[in-house]
Image 1 (tube, one colour):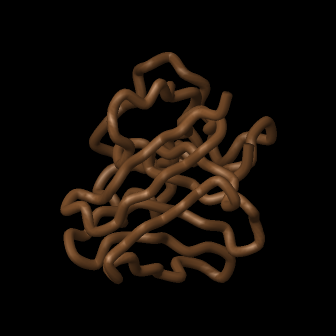
Image 2 (image 1 turned 90 degrees about the vertical axis):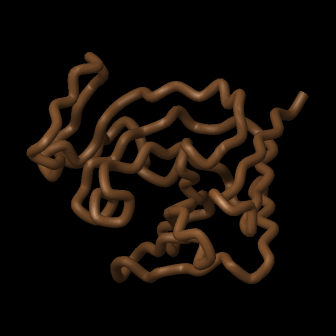
Length: 139
C-alpha cells in the first residue's frame, strides 16, 4: 500500500501531493538554508515521479548555486523545495506538510555553518558538512 502525503505553502497557492515512502527528515544548517529560512531547513525528500505540484502560478524557483535551486511561493514567501539539478529527487520542507506526517528528524548536517545564537541539544548525530551515509537530496 502506497503512502500519500499532502502539503502546501502558507497561503495555499502552492499545494503538493507525494505518493510513496519519504526519507527521514534531515536538518540542514548551511548558510544558504539559514539565510532563506531565517533558521535552518528541516526537509525530507521524494522521487520526482512521486511528487505532484499544483499551483496557481505562484511557485517560483531561485537558482541558489551552480547545481541547485530552491522553490518557494511568490505570493506568501513560503520556502517549500530544494532541488539538485541533476538528481531525480526533490527535498520538501517538513513544515509544509499537512498533519499528521509520521516524519522524524534523524540528523543534522552542515553544523559547522550553524547560527551562533543556538545550540543543538537533541542528541541526534551531527555532521560538520554532510554525511556519507545519506545523500542530501536522495534516499
